[in-house]
Length: 85
Image: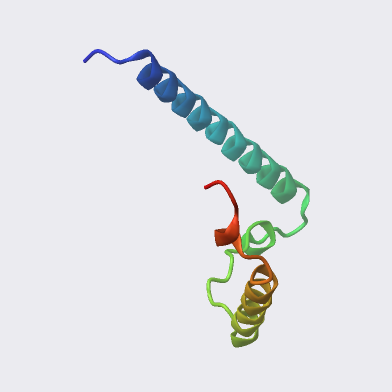
């Protein structure tokens, strides 16, 4: 399979990003190992807490209000009246 120069460049960039992700993951593991080593009685929950996927009702209402405010703020401009286009 022959690759174009652009395809090759994109593939190499993706491979480099993958390598950086591996380095980052290894650094996180090293930090967790060191934290566990220094703790007197390490627990898994002290090292890593899974993010809570549930969103509270108040948070949803806050985001809705923010979106409404943003929409009102953006409505003060009329982008369709821009000349020359």
